[in-house]
Length: 101
Image (cartoon, rainbow, N blue to C red; front, side, top):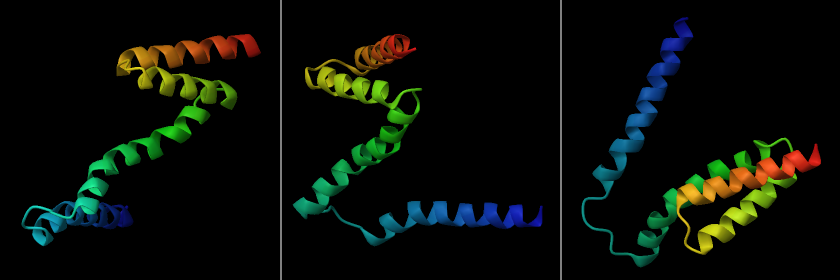
C-alpha cells in the first residue's frame, strides 16, 4: 500500500509538468509554420493512433473491422457526420460477422 502513494505522487508530478512546462517555455505566439502545422495535427494523430488498433481488435473478425474502417473512411470523405459514419460502420460489422458465423 505504501508504494501506491508513491505511484500516485509520481503520476501527479508528471501530469502537472506536462501541463505547466509549455506555457512557461513558450510565452509568445508561435510563428514557425512547420511547428504550427505540426501542433495543429497532433490531436488528430493521437486520436487515430488510439482508435485504429481498437477498430480491428474490437470485432471477432479483423476482416470485419478492416472493411468497416474502409467504408467509414469513404463515408466521411463524402461529408457524412460522425453519427452516420459510426452507424454505417456498426451495421457493416454486424452484417459481416453475421455472414461469417
